[in-house]
Image 1: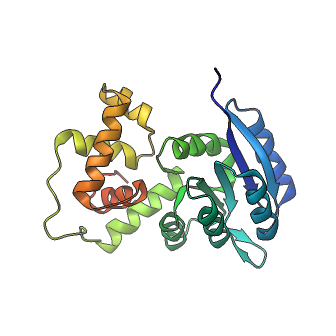
Image 2: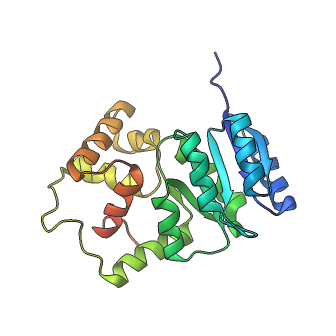
Amino acid sequence: MNKPAWRILLLDDHQLFRAGLRMILERAPGLEVVADAGNGTDALEAALRTAPDVVVADIHLPGEDGIVIAGQILKKFPAAKVVFLSSDADVALVRRALESGGRGYLLKDNAAQDLLRAIEAAVQGGIYLCPEVAAKLVQSYQRDGAAPLSPQPPRLSERENAVLRLLAQGLRNKEIALRLKVGTKSVETYRSRLMKKLGYQSTAELIRYAIREGLVPP
């Protein structure tokens, strides 16, 4: 029996750009574009009508905030995954997008190359940052000298550290399992254990911890 396709909602005010993304997604197996919208009102209506699994949202919309709109959709569909698009790699904006529940952040210039990987990572429970954004985020933490989240961070095992590093690099559970030569369920167990040890509730928080602790190379 074939697995149901992941249902995608596109939000971007540039019609030609949106059409290009739709074309890319419709050619990919296992993905279905169920709706697209050029503004927040249409996006919210489309979300209520289609119950998307993934929302691909432009951050900068005329007179609107894509992060806020995505947050409103997540309130209705908390299991949905949001991948943000932007022409801006500003670190404060990236942090805000991730803190809002975003599972991906891509620059529009490279969206065609990165979008499928970002969606795949998101639906597998990971987070994907395009290389330019990831580098800026790491450099920001290093430049600011961000301190660990606690004076005495919990002691992690070698395998827990390995899983944490790979999660922060945007790898999905299956890829981590292959890399470490363990089962996918083992990866899920390690991730749950990391969240419990570090006191977090999401993969995004684990990634921010990994960056602050210098576990992700610049």
